Amino acid sequence: MDAAQKRVFVRVDFNVPMEEKDGKMVINDSTRIKETLPTLRLLISRGAKIILAAHLGRPKGKREPSMSLQPVATLLAQMLGRPVAFVDDCIGEKVAAAVAALKAGDVLLLENVRYYNQEEANDPAFAEKLAAVADVYVNDAFGAAHRAHASTEGVARVIARRGGQCAAGLLMERELQFLGKELESPARPFVVILGGAKVSDKIKVIDRLLEKADAILIGGAMVYTFELALGHKVGKSLSEPDKKDVALAALAKAKARSIKFMLPSDDVLATAVATGKLNKKGKPVMEFQNVRPHACGDIPDNEAGYDIGPETARRYGEIIRNAKTILWNGPMGMFEDKRFAAGTLAVAQAVADATARNGAKSIIGGGDSVKALNQAGLADKVTFMSTGGGASLEFLEGQVLPGVAALTDKL
Ligand code: ADP
Ligand code: MG
Image (tube, rainbow, N blue to C red; front, side):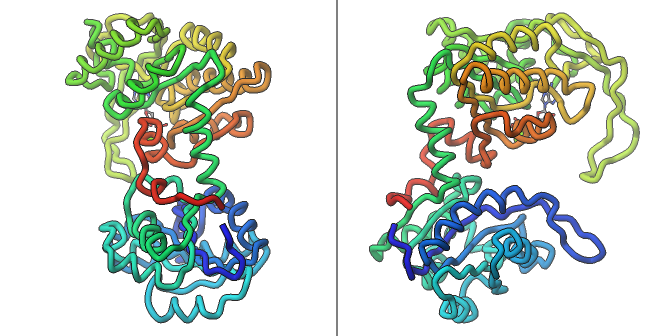
């Protein structure tokens, strides 16, 4: 892409967690900003005039002051070591004036695109207004690429129609490489670890990976839908009784293809007791009593499974340590509670070991899986961690992401 002196509209993922402190919004975690720096530095070095667009939270079409991107502009300027201009709108005359003032290598951040309902509606007229100030388009917001919104898809189409180039940013490029190309012809054994809350969330991924993987290791609450399907009692474990057929179909497909499809042989049970208190989100706070290891099979009516057990962790660990390619999506248990984090930690350690000692490529997708790896302090011991929660799942399902489809040029 020829970016010199060009007005480059860059869609970034600046949807950072914020918190109010002394009447001011402060950024709790700047990872997402940091991850866009390589793309921004490259564009700066090429003398582009950079116009950054992003969303923050869910203001639902209103100018919600707590969801302003202004604090991001301040922090980004510090991180880049150069000024970042900010304009408190994303379309209109103010934006046009701010863009007209840009010189080669300058950076301008627009206000939250979701202050307008037309953003999520992918309104063509709104996309035209966004595109009015730009010559070319770069999308580095993988986490938003599964949504066809005006700033992720509409603008690209307007610019492409005018003959302008549209390219993936460096971060987006890496996501597409690791979640896409690397998994097309993986070095073997290719081991997939799937966990998390629901079979229904991941069934399309399971189905697709059954065609590529050598082994699939199942953990998390989704275990209990498989257990139900196999005729076991699961007590109060999180499960989806209406997805039993889906679980059985996956087991049958694995058998037909001679893929090692593993379910836990032991787990960790507890009895959840309501404390009568509510958390910040208004949900009842539970207390977990009588935490105990258990060999898989029937679970008593008043208990539930919250983690894989030590024997399963060891068996899974052995397979993982021999892998050459690893894809991990979904924690092995309710890792947010220390007592149910051991399975996830053991798997994280095995993934790190395989990467360091066996030369495995390890790829982590899913918001909570990334959180778990950070919690384990092993984030820099894996090959790649995806920045897109929902987007990485949809991409792994084999879907064409609308925000990616439009990017036909190279940066
Ligand atoms: P990801 O974001 O990595 O795709 P998911 O969102 O599918 O993962 O699942 C993560 C959530 O699943 C976590 O909040 C975790 O507490 C929960 N979870 C995992 N195992 C269990 C279990 N056995 N019982 C209840 N919740 C579980
Ligand atoms: Mg999640």
